[in-house]
Image (cartoon, one colour):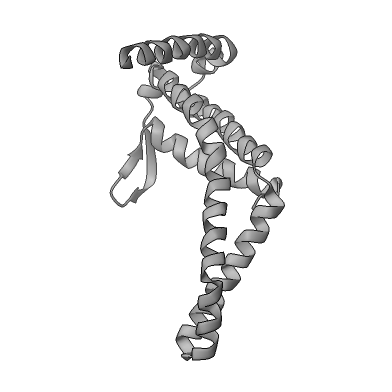
Length: 173
């Protein structure tokens, strides 16, 4: 049973790799630094688009605002020691927890849908010699990482900044 599932996943990944080779294979003719940058952009667009179209952004913003207000009021009440306010907030605790749970569910749903294609995408990148050979010398030293980045470190750096910029442009929660 399990082998059948892995065979199916492997077959699907093979089709996906063939598609990626025909659609984006040309980027590996460029220096690895640019190719991985393009990969970060493509994966960022897929990921952010999934979150943008599958999550009610206004509802998510409202829930974040309400839970943030609750946390601030709770911290203030704990700081000042106001018993009356603490009792009032205790009655609202269940609602705040439900909202946090709903918010987590809203943000996780798109991740489940984009996770497998992105993992397959990473497998495709890892199989590219230009990516494997990529080493970037940094002008500074990062704690725990040193002064070089491989393809994955470069991808994470590019992806973080690109995804954040795209979220800002789309005014996402």
